[in-house]
Image 1 (tube, helix red, strand yellow):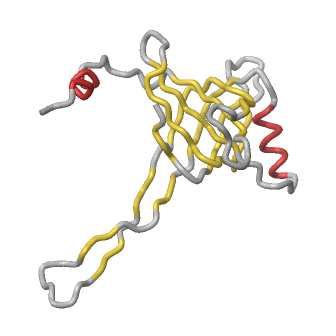
Image 2: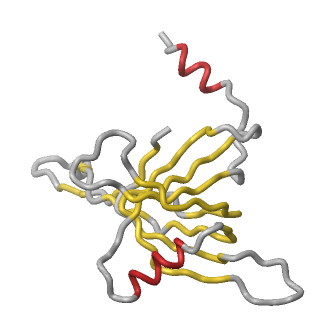
Length: 164
């Protein structure tokens, strides 16, 4: 018998994937209580790519089995997440990148990418665990252009999860 919650989920209106918000948080250390993470900044970006996880299969050749090898789970790898054409009201993202490129400790943040429905209410939230910036590209400076502050921000991370 089908779960009634599953049926309601299938009746949702289509999500508009271009409507999303990004939050950067510093996680508290040593088994933090729920909700004790520290928000640093948030931003609005026009595009987000790379929400992707790939499992490397392990092939095991079983003796005496002529039909084919057994397939097992291997390592999981995560794609670089690229945020494009963004704005934020603080310099925290640049300061984070500059801190890491200056030889400081690899300061990691958790990143939440919240997709919103057509009314602006949260619909899905993806979380990147222990993210670190590896590329920061500012917009071109052109008096006739309409570019925004951050052209690209590339993030590597150690985990992708769907939290809401």
